[in-house]
Length: 78
Image (cartoon, rainbow, N blue to C red; front, side, top):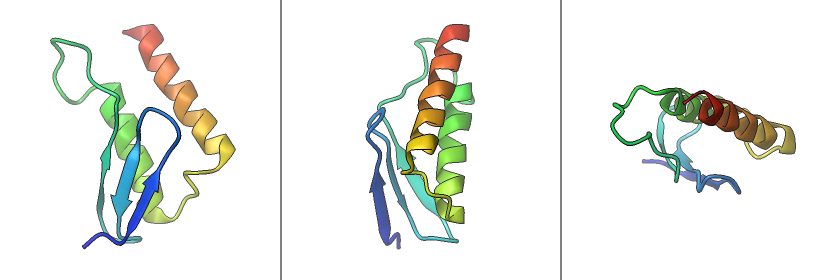
C-alpha cells in the first residue's frame, strides 16, 4: 500500500505513493470539455508522479514554479 502523501500548494495536487514503487495523483486540473485523456495535462501529472516515486523533491519552490509554468503554457496553447 502507499505510505507517503504529499499535498502540493498548487492545483489541488495530492500525490500518494510508495517511494520506488507506485502511486497515484489527484488534482483539480481537468481536461478541457470535449477532449479525451492523453492531453498535455495528463503528461504533466504523470511526470510529477514519476518524479515523486523516484525521490525528486516535488515540494521545492523551483519544482512548484515549474509545475505552474508548464500548466500555464498548456493553457496558452489550448
